[in-house]
Image (cartoon, rainbow, N blue to C red; front, side, top):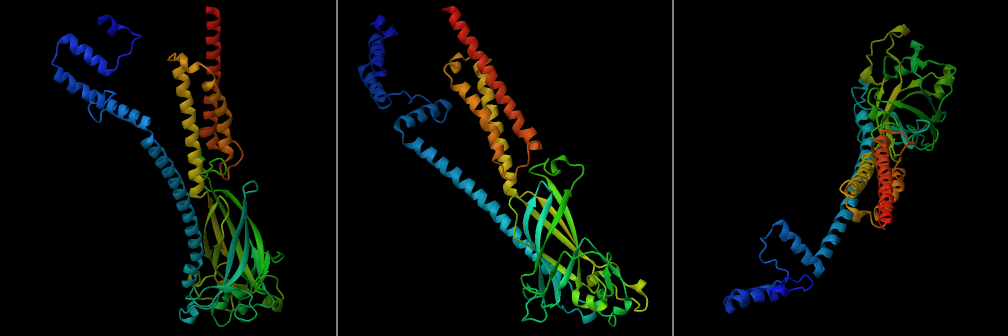
Length: 437
């Protein structure tokens, strides 16, 4: 009996081992039968393992895998949670973009409500405004294309309407309103000021009389014109915010200046770019793919900027220059930043995982990991797959940004070195095997 128990080629079940041990020790058959029943109820011998220990969890998980039910439930729930979580994050970030566009359209109303003329007891008079529709941002030319049209607001509680409606004499300018860009206007003839009222702007003209207008609005509702606004670096001493180099955290800034001239009165005055009109507000609409633009404007012609104390006989007593300045700030939306950071995280995770496997196989001399072509195939696959992730990033600039130096290039180098090390280790192992034969 002793020699059979020790034979390594003879497998013994827990029940047989129990009978042999009890017969040799002469124990009570009743106590032996009780232990046999317990062993039959738990053939894997887990009853003696304390619950919730690491060993107990491993044994319980092994039993679940053999049953096959709960592991399938686990990975199904895990997959559903990942998909729902990802879709939820994307929808949430997209929702912020929608709310952002709504806030852009509210900026004009806030400015208009405070544009009360001091000459009419604070009551709001008709206001001419510009509406800009974002078309495209060309990162190579660093230019934002915006299509501008006219708006008219007659009451602070009303919605602005399109300029140039022939059925509404307040919005219709048969000769049109000329819009000049990147110009200002200065005092020209004080005699055009009408009884010290708010039409003081009409005594102004553009500071370049030979300039041509960027467009004419007010004759039809569909009147519009396009402008290309050049953008530059916003922060000079922050590498992460530099245009293109700091992708996806780069920030840009641009500016455009508008002056409006009533073409009808300019013809009467026989002076190009005279009879300046106040552009009271700006509204932005639409959005550009992979970009978010903030804007703020300053109306130098507004009553809040003017003190009505001029002398109609002295042009030098007229207020400051009259123009509308619009400042833009361009940055990447949170959705794009999230995707870029996720791509870098995936790159580093894969690179670190391959690096650990390589070190375990070579430094720790786990020769079984070098058998076959599994680890070598994984290294070469990752070597070509990881740089491809970079090309999937939305709005990514040409190669050379900081994200490439931090999250793409080092990962590729690590995987390349791991592939070389694994190749050398496999060749060395093959050489030793052939030499031993």
